[in-house]
Structures are given as structure tokens and as C-alpha cells.
Image (cartoon, rainbow, N blue to C red; front, side):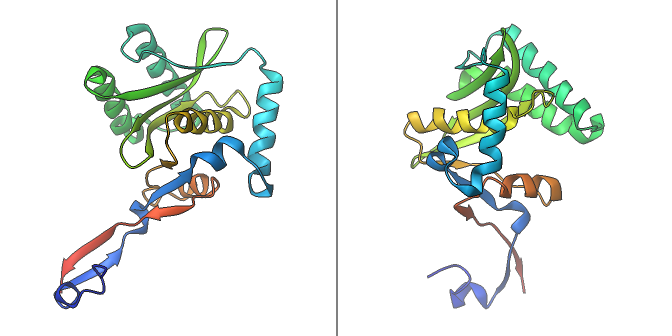
Length: 200
């Protein structure tokens, strides 16, 4: 019996799907391989990126190192400028990243960095949660490297798959149209639905 169909609950509460906060669930197998027409555009971007930057190196790095934490912040500011976002719009995310970096030793994080000639050009900060799920907490990249985001997502999926993750929780889009379009483009295989519950 689902919550919505249970008369003990449905008679007393209004239950409405909160689509803005649905978590997107991706397949590590699909995203790591990018097979088929539905991933054709992303596969082309990855091929363009690897062809232009054959010296690219993707590694799991030590997020506790101060010099790498500095590079993460610098990359955040590059992303902020490229997306033409004002600091009031990014301050919460920046603060969240700084809090995570300052307490990284207390979490079992999987920080993946994309380096070109020892320069960090993209990163994803991930965590294995439960039941074969990986979670992408943060990801940022220097978009001047064409195809970098597609390459980052493919390598992140491959990395998590090697750690026995079957799914990636790509989190919610918060009702932001551009973010929703970007997340949908990765062809989620399902959603973790969330609801708004109020008294009738």
C-alpha cells in the first residue's frame, strides 16, 4: 500500500508530488558506455574532447590537500563567471562546498578530478551511500574545454561502477528550467519521488 492509497492517510492529508525535488536516478552502465542514439550527442562531445586533449588524466585525488582545495574553489569561480551568475545566487553552493572541504576527513568521499597538464579543469565530489547507489554532491568544470562536462559525467559513472555502484543519484533540479533540461538529457531510468504533505 502506498502512502497516497492508504485511506488512513489520504482522508486526513493532501499529498502532492513535488516534481521540483524528484531525485534523478541514472544508470552507471548507460552513462559510462554512452551507447545508442539517445547518447549520440554526448558521445560526440566526449570524442571531441579526448581527441583534442589526449594528455587528459582522470584520477581520484586527496581532497584534504590544501592546494587541491584551492584549485576546487578557483574552478568554482571560473564556472561562476562562465555562467554569468552573481555571487548572491551562488553563495549557498559555495558555502556548502567550503563546509564539505573543511570537514572532508569525516566523510568517505570519492573526489574525481580531470587534469590537463597538472591543471584541474573539472571535478565531481561523490559518495557511495547504500544499495549500490552513488551520489554526486558537486560537479564543476571549465566549459572552455569543449566536451568537458560530458567527459566528466562518463568518467564519474565509470569510476562509481568500478566501486560496485549500479545507480547514480543525480539529485533534484529545484524547478530550474535549464537544470531540468540538463539532467533530463542524461536519460534517467527512474526518479526518487518526493511529496508535499499538508492537512486537509
